[in-house]
Amino acid sequence: MIFNYDLQNAIVAFVDSLRPTADLQRAIYLDAVSGFATTVSNFLTSIGYPPR
Image 1 (cartoon, rainbow, N blue to C red):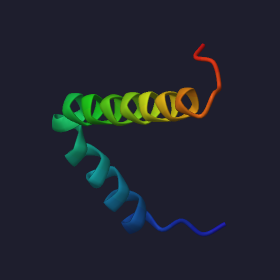
Image 2 (cartoon, rainbow, N blue to C red):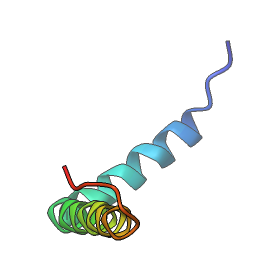
Image 3 (tube, helix red, strand yellow):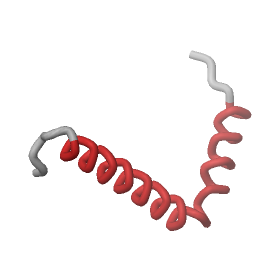
Image 4 (cartoon, rainbow, N blue to C red):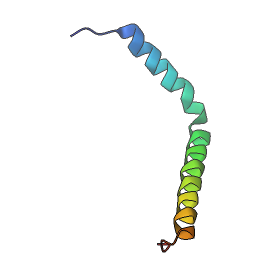
């Protein structure tokens, strides 16, 4: 098995660089998922499926 430590270190550095904005990224993700679910629910309701 071959290990590429430069790549591994680059990935670790990238992940560490994201840590300060983790709360903001979480909020954006949850807003996007919630918006998508609401849109799909409204669409399905508009074409006759009962809301759950």
